[in-house]
Length: 206
Figure 1 (spheres, one colour):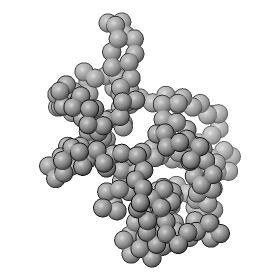
Figure 2 (cartoon, helix red, strand yellow):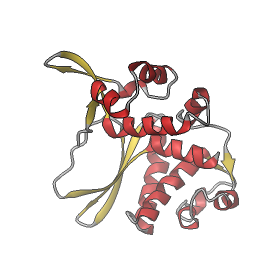
Figure 3 (cartoon, rainbow, N blue to C red):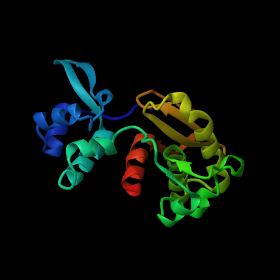
Figure 4 (cartoon, one colour):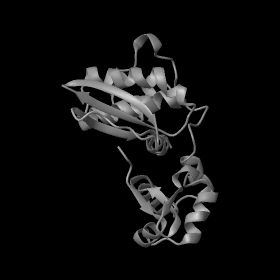
């Protein structure tokens, strides 16, 4: 599954931003370095970007820049924050996730205070439940995968794939930009960018 790319020229024309704006946002860490993909073309080396991700990020920057500074925006787009902890009651009262999603968290591992990372896992599971892409049993598979495997990526930007094969659900994590090929009889039910979920959750909490 190759991610669709967009050239820098087409990106600037489509979004109406300038070359200077794009690279200023890069310097401010609003656009990740690894989204700048150098590829050989018939005219030489050109820069491309993951189309869906860069368009979504630019849209968010445009919508947010009137309300907060670029430095504060960089914090929103930064890796997992530390020191943020909520109890189960706070998570429900703040409407961060549904009670159904909270119930998916294994009772034997449930802490008195949920870290941001744990809330991220709940947030992802809630997305799948609310969209109808996963039922409660399948959501438990996703939660188990996140709890057992997420830290192995050492907070690299990764994606979650929720798939079905012959009606049986599976879940896996992959580093973003890593190419994945599935068998023809595998259906990709949901593909979730965890970095985007981090951003959404930060905004929801704040």
